[in-house]
Amino acid sequence: MLILYDLCGKNDLRFSPYCWTVKLCLDFKEFKFETIPVRFTEKNKIAFSGQKLVPIIVENINDEKKIIYDSWNIICWLNNLNKDNSSSLFINSHDKTFANFLHHWTSKELLPILFQVIANDILNILDKQDLEYFVLSREKRLGKPLSSLMSNIDKSAEKFRKSIN
Image (cartoon, rainbow, N blue to C red; front, side):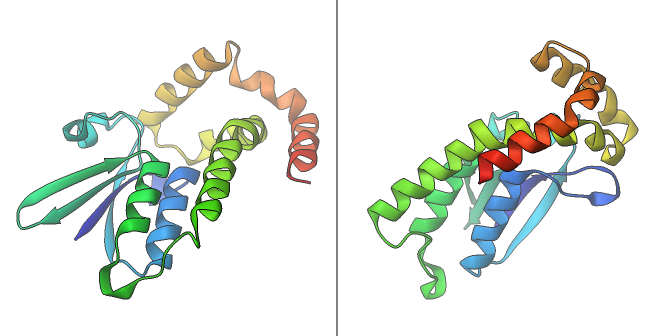
């Protein structure tokens, strides 16, 4: 059985693009899995893994646990699993190289721009206990208040559109 530790907000809303990617790969390979929701302030749920971020996959085989973390590492690991004649995620090594580039480019270039557009909307999907953590950690990372992003949403959205074009 595969278990995916997955970021969640209130009402069990799952919003992590990294977790989405892993779920899409699991679905594509037709693997059965269950998810365990993890809020920003529930680091204790994933402490066993030595990680502070999701996604994390745990594979239980004969009471032995295998822990895989980081979305790209999980994708590569899933690609090598061939349960029930499941399909490969990559056609060949060139395909895998391009997927690796696309994964990392998206993470470093697109998602930071998109974050500037949606950051203040994320506040609406977080439970009370996660709100303070999210605001403080993101403002520390940005070096400015989240609310300051509001005045540049149109510019950030345009920059995002240009980037994906």
